[in-house]
Image 1: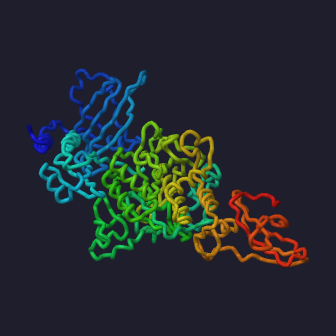
Image 2 (image 1 turned 90 degrees about the vertical axis):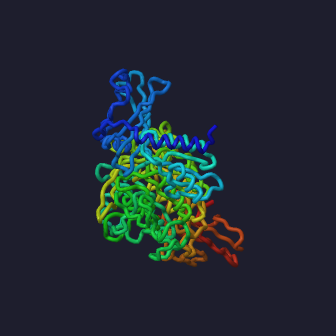
Image 3 (image 1 turned 120 degrees about the vertical axis):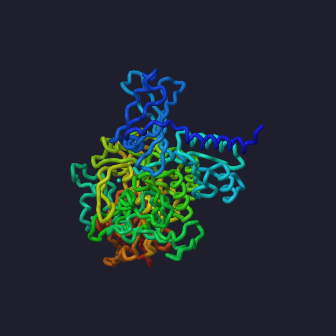
Length: 635
């Protein structure tokens, strides 16, 4: 009887030999499938009528198939004659390596043509593995090489990408079968999937940013926005907050993105050393996981568009306004110039950002296949209190029925974001319609015709849930600045508990509403009224009610005015009327017991005024109280 090692070697030898046995038919034209084995004989059923891939599809895998060259394909029947899978070997323009596409089809009763239930894309010559316990990298590399496999990149602790000797239709499943018999070598082996990117200041293009302030421009519904001007009366900057953007990189030279890039405190720039020992040499401003170097410069535009929504410089007389300033953007390049990326690089980037301590990550990514190793890394993020703001996808699908990953991973620290348009409805047009899901999409945020920074010095308008997620990310950054100790769960709760709920979103997302950034921050201020974010001596809730900002020590309430006339002691303070909290005046004679009883309220819309009669009392004290509840008449 052969040992498992010999069996595995034989399987892999057969795998390598199969590369020589690929049918020698010519490649098909882009988007046209070569006939499957047996077609034209007894394949006149629904499987032979599978419609061709559409280049204008909202599904990025279908678009790639339509543009690509199909090298091989196979139809795999299922016990249900109405269902089948189609597996394609494809040379696509979204990846430099050959890819494998798995499609699931059904022909329902009475349907005119079959419907594709799911499409996933994988590298045809790549795996993700977790090393067996106790097996170090040199031993793992040597044993894999003995089997004809190449240990490629370290992704996270004990997690690696692996290259196969050939890219064929069966290379990946055969290798998985072989490795399943080698528990001494690997604890886990999975395919390596491919996903895609899902887009009142003096800035001249601010008027185009309906998502920040909707004044009915271009036919919109006034007020259908995240109310950025109201947010900026409370907070404009989030110094010290790091947001990791896992995308196509950052345009470091764009005039509206200057000064945003994170700087690694543990690296010495240009010394050619890995100063912090994380395996990345001179990663002083992030990492390019696609090319494995320290230059995460954007070559696609998607990542710079996302970053501009979050934090483009404001009040600089240029371009657009980001929602929050002062944030440090940690660029992790996981998408190539074709706007696609591998699961292995995504895992590595999430682990990298987590270990660097980024409390918030933006993943404007869609259509990755499910992967248990990525799921485990998201668990690590959850345990570290890290919020993952992820777009819901752009196929118009119900994610409850057909999960879209990575947003579909079931973790409490993920906030999945759909796209609403300027008329206060889920975007459901022909181009990039938003996914939805009563239990799988948390809320909606602006994502239709969003104007932001791209390559060069340019700006452009993008549509998609990729543009919705960064609006939520920016709101999360504001909350993290206000309360640095808050975890993902607390930030997520504040965002979901403060949405603008309307019938348009009922039943299609968890919260039943759309993002309201200032309301989320106000809710947080009411929960921790005594915290002083900018350390100016005025608690956050007091500043909120006095109309000053919580992010600037130079913006703080003026000293209270006092008066003493006609035997009455009075006190006053400028204020801003708020619907959810209030200021009031209390009196005491001993600084221990305080009451509103006996205080005469003479306030107006802009000033809090109150007074008490001394009535022969030797001493009376007055104080102004920030109350985390709406105003009510004094007793």
